[in-house]
Amino acid sequence: MSFLFAREAELGCDPKVKRLLDNRLVFGMEDEQHNPTFYRTVRTLSEYGSCNITGRMTRVWEVNHVSGPEADADILRSGLVLKGVWLDESSPTERLIQSEIFAAIECRKAFIDTNQCVQRLEPDALKELKHLVEEERYKTYFLTILADLEGQVSKSVPPVARRKRGLLCPEIKHVGTPGSHRNIERVSSSTPQANQPEEERAAQRPAVPRVFRPKRQYRSVCAELCDTVGKMRSPDEVLKVPNQTLSGECSVPA
Image (cartoon, rainbow, N blue to C red; front, top):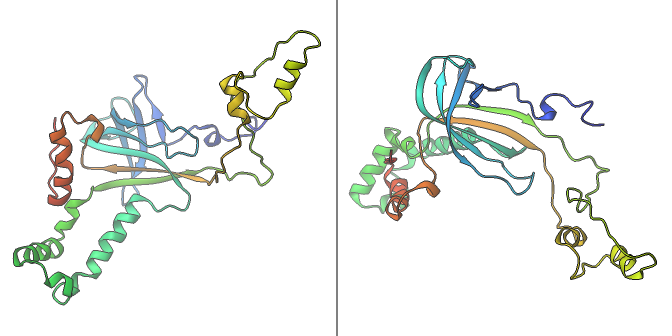
């Protein structure tokens, strides 16, 4: 009955996403001046299936910035990355976290010459640190967020809701001979038996406590096109990742 009265967004229809005939997606977002912008997918970079509906459901695409939602819209900029994720309702967004980090660095800019820990650095390291902060080169260590969007918030769990184990498991039918007490004991027993099917035994195990919090949809577009660690071709490329983290230089294999 709940499906009869659900809105389109509650059924999973996102008005800011359009699927083209070739199965590419067009995401509608806004830039910093709140002007509408559109991003059309090129390929999937990462799509990890969540083992539970409470997961973050992170998906990452390579996208092109296009002039509109049409299939033949002109490409304005290529080689971008769009990430979609479901955050806890109270979790900060990536742009907010990045802005707070930048603000904290700017607040400490005036204390570089008087901070005792900083003064213990080698002269070359101290000089490099000053250049990083004064010229805002520290921002090269972070992804460049071009646009982001906070979307729908999922509903809270009703206070009268109760968890039911095995709700999504197929119904198990018990076949026994008339008057058989063995089959009756097997059905009524709440203790998993060795000869029971795995689905039935899983449904009888005690439920693990889990808190269901409302999730908020969030998307962000970054200028740097990267590959996931799992798709790197050799251990040498994997070891370059921590080196790039320290140097701020990134070279992604074609």
